[in-house]
Length: 246
Image 1 (tube, one colour):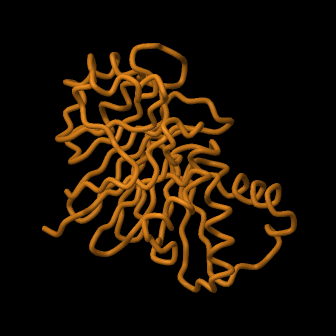
Image 2: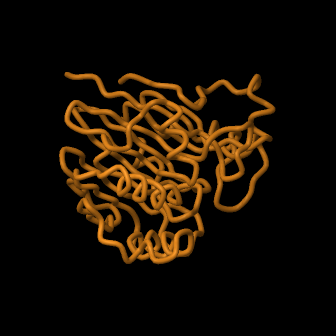
């Protein structure tokens, strides 16, 4: 069985806590390279790590908040100016295409009207239904996070490995389904113990950890509150530029 690698190009929250880039996770399988989320700072993070955007075939989006999808307009324009020809697939919640086009237009007026040199296919993921995207099978499960459109966690199967990713959410039993048996579960932990709507805290996650039944869990999307208490954390956490091999 071939190795699959996961690189945290961006492991931060929306506000750059700890100087971290916004969410952007690179997965490299033998047959494809794809991103899970593409926050506004993602193109910078990719180039800092020497990752060529031209090698990315698919971008999977958990939800339509700027720190998870707003790097896509920059990605598209960079591809246009660098004369990309390879197709690009962007898959996410309902409304993903309209939101990307609207953001393109706000950031760079008239850019949404330009015909790309390369084909872009938008895929709206259907809840709890596996979607085959090239060599990757993606199942989206609805979670609890308000963003003006459905928010998802993702279960991704590639080259015999399963990667689960919470996206942003408060606790929901959907995470049990997503993480079950996964080789890696990437999970947000925004606060250490403070409970707020739409996000997870570390203490609550620890109480639920046994029910997740994943082989390995790594925390991400941490606020200054979490980053200031890392010595108290007994679970792995992500750092920008860190690579995990499965």
